Length: 136
Length: 296
Image (cartoon, rainbow over all chains, first blue to last red; front, side):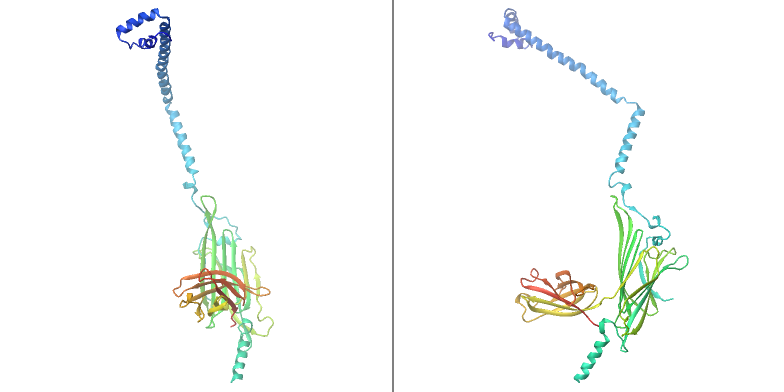
């Protein structure tokens, strides 16, 4: 980099220089090959950056549209999905260790399948008793 | 005078020979228990009958094992000082209750202890499932019958069990045994091998007996002035060779009842059972318990 003014080319391209200095530098750039090349480079970079900005501007509406499409689920489908989720929660709740269906299962003696010859046929859940009585 | 005293002692020894109650007329008292299992509904129906016939003081067990229900009952019987038959009952039941949330079986358990003094005109009734409010009720009726036989009969001290009517399902098991019920308990505390406290007492099987230990003058300073009471129970008797065994439960308390030491052990009948008291009283102290059968 031999030209001392090349450093200011960037400010010129960005329009940051005072008007008089800008006019003089513009004249210089036309005659200085190095500054001219630098200006071309800066302009190229600026176009690239501008292009990205344009892409950003065009991409945002696309995403918004996509979101709009997702939200726009038909009501019956949405209702079915909610029902399916409710069903899933119910299944998970039942399978929990302390769920109501998994509390202590009581086996009443009269529910016990006993054979007619087994003494268990006398069992109705009563407490054993022992006492004495007068001989008959 | 001395001759009369010796004669009196000889007669006494003859009366209480072998632990069996022998009457003055040379008769041994025996007892018969008729155990009848009855279904009480709709009409009384006898399901099984068992007869236990043995010397006075014969004990027996009645166990019932059926679907979802277990019962264990122990009957210790004896003749008390008033010549009455008393029956000490230990009843344990276990019934299937259901399932835990984790699928494990749950049982409801119950234990009852009772002592009944049974008159000549009375029977003992056991309802394993309780009263069923007019429904089918299972009843086990135990009818005692006291009688005497000549002491010199070979079977005077024998124990017999007979099953004239068996329950076909085999859900009820009945066992009988004759073991000593009364014991003499001797308890000592030793210090460096020398006796420094002693006490004696009499106990009935499975019952705790308090034996106050009297300190001797040779007791070391560290325990002088303190009071010790040994609590000893003979929990079981096992006929064994070369000597019978007793399982004992023991402890020492001070005068206020605060427990100093406690434990359990099995020892030969008449043999000394030793337990170190280093931690409780200090180095060199030892508890000695000796249980012997008390002849009636």
